[in-house]
Amino acid sequence: MIISKKLTITASLLGVMALGIAATMPQQAPPPKAQNLKVLPKNISHKDLDHIMDKWAASLGVHCNFCHARNEQTNKMDFASDAKPEKETARYMLRMEQKINKKFFKAGKDSLGMVMEAGINCNTCHHGTAHPELKVPERQHGPGGPPPGGAGTPPPPPSN
Image (tube, rainbow, N blue to C red; front, top):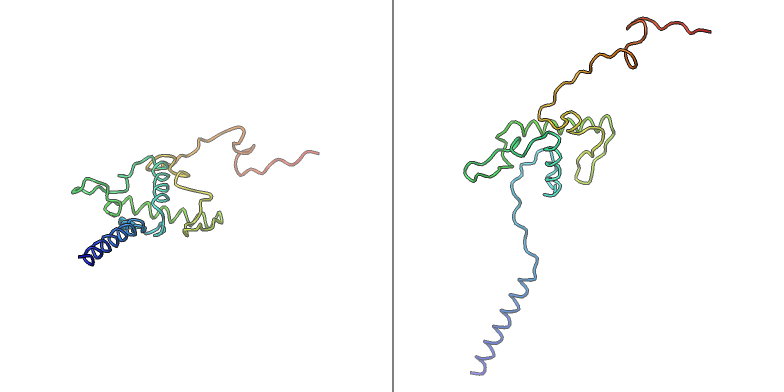
């Protein structure tokens, strides 16, 4: 009976210790959500990804559903889906932006391997609109206008 009591107490103490150890062990992170990243770095943090998406949305004056499709079964945004062509256009535009910044503004890469911001970004052309408009400046005369005598006329000789 004494041996049985000792065994029960020992087993109970071992169980409590096992629960205590399990409770203090670091929990595994939940599996990452499918992101379908093709241009952005695969190891980008959720915070950095949200920051980039917020900048793009503001630069184009749009919301998430401009590029991302809604899952009809769950009635939630399906960020991994490529159902909308605007998402591929955004990838194309990011590649273009990175090439321009690297070639003409000598932008290096950051710790994630992305070309760092430099000379241009989405807002450079979009100015808060989803589809940028071509704006041709009005023809000016006077300061900043054509040279005296019209275009193609040589300037007058210097007076002495």
